[in-house]
Amino acid sequence: STVVVSGDAVYAFGAAEAAGQPQFAADHDIALAAAALEGMDKQSLQESLARLLQHDDHAVRAAVVQSLRGVAAPEQQEKDEEKKDEEEMQCVEDTMTSLADSEWEEVEPLAPAEPTTPPPPSAKVLGADALVAGIEAEDAGARGDVTAEFEDVLAATGASQAFRVGRVAVAAGEAAAVP
Image (cartoon, rainbow, N blue to C red; front, side, top):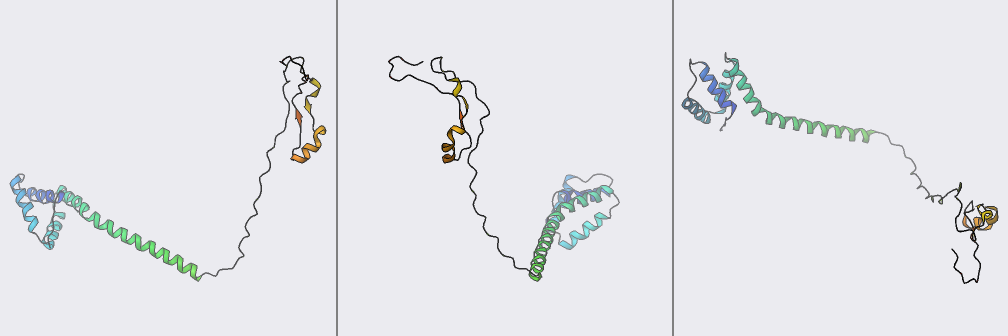
């Protein structure tokens, strides 16, 4: 099997090699170490990482830990998702088992509600301004509540009140225009 190491892991291997030497590794040495990683088998790579985790330099250990977090995270996430899915399925199974074991009592279905008709529109006249139609057409005494006068019309229509705003008297048969 082939194990590919990149990013921080390559840096960790380079840092470990450089930490034991009085000077930093040259770019050429880091490139050789990276090439060597490509040919390493899984067990050799694990042993190398384990030795780096025991390194005297804290920066080397920290670099290895950071690198391993990036590699291990996707695998751990997949395991966590599988565990979560298993727990959800177990919860569903437990609920279904619980429902199946429960005793159920029969109840009569509810009768459908009878449709109701909305109430008819309603209004109440509290007052009105005087009708202005000109002096020859006004009948001031005809304005106001006329419920008693129109009882038969109210009963036929379902209304409960009649109110006259005013009455206009116009002479019939005159040729002159009414203002």
